[in-house]
Image (cartoon, rainbow, N blue to C red; front, side, top):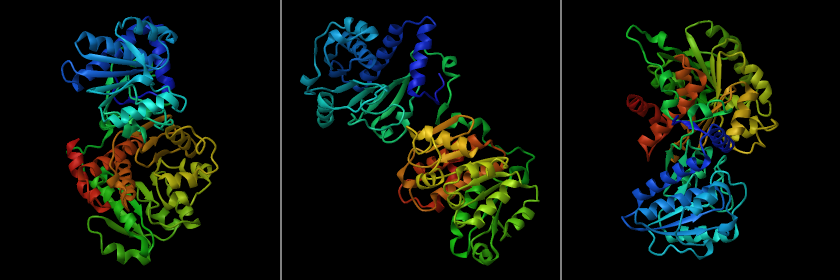
Length: 493
């Protein structure tokens, strides 16, 4: 089982269909799913404890019926509530209900008195409408009870593709899903309502899912660890890459220094800060291991990059918005180096995403690192981004338009590539919401690209390293701490 694969809802449905078409009965898949739910429930229940199981009218409810049968056979006291009449169940869900010989009561009559666990098997990842009426009232009662909840597939009320709440949702202590995680498990606010997530192998072969496009992944080390740069015994600083970071004017130099420090700490053998002459003294007062070079114009940048030892360029943090920045971006791209664009470099192309895509295509590799506001400004007129049904589809369309890897920053950061791959960050920390944090991320991406790491993998690794460093550091984190704490996270890899 590919543990970092994510399956969109439509892909999961197709994987089920293909597996059944290959000769595996749907009831076998459901039996395995229900068994996985029962196993998770046993770990959350006291022996012979009472469990309340809420079943919906579809296959999610069928999983609940199988879990109910298995738990009852083990001596647990089971109360099963069903949404709608039993006679309306069909297909495998009806077959699963027939195998359960315990009492079934109406969902409206369910109480959680003396229950040690509630199993939420109402709706899975395929929910397409807002929950209301009796279902919403039942969810509210369970949530108020404080009884631990085990969600089957995804907490009821969470959209499986977007993580959005459809009307109301039932927060889970733990979620058991099947074959692979879904986008809604990792995207906010769904991620915060899933609790601990475990994936049960129900027998869907990896090969069945290999051809799905776009290819979605959880951003975890298994996705990019093999491409992470590792210095060889005969290396020297320029074999480890030389990153060039462009500084803004005298009164806004800090952001570029944060980026430069991030590039150096992640392993670039050398980092140079290209600074306007008026800001040289300010930058020199703060720099030691990072070198400094004067650069005021696109022509000077071109001359500077005639030195082939430079392997990647970062531009945007604190640089200023306007035509001068656009000219610098074009000059940097023309040199064919790796290019990382953030902040002012993106805002300088507001509403001109297609133009930026043509410019970026000249670079060896290009990564854009917009936060939500920069995404909105850059792609304000780009069809398929602002009107996308969810964030990962918006990110993929954005990457296609700008012909670059795009890091859509946020609490659920997404990395998207124009080749149709996307990775969603599995965990992060709100302590990263501090001034300058994104500038350090820009530097980490640049440092990895400078060392020759492919753009998509470099972006994914940078996002994960940035988040993990924030998690490890915790309260009190400021941007300067990130590059200093990064080596400890790297050692952990």
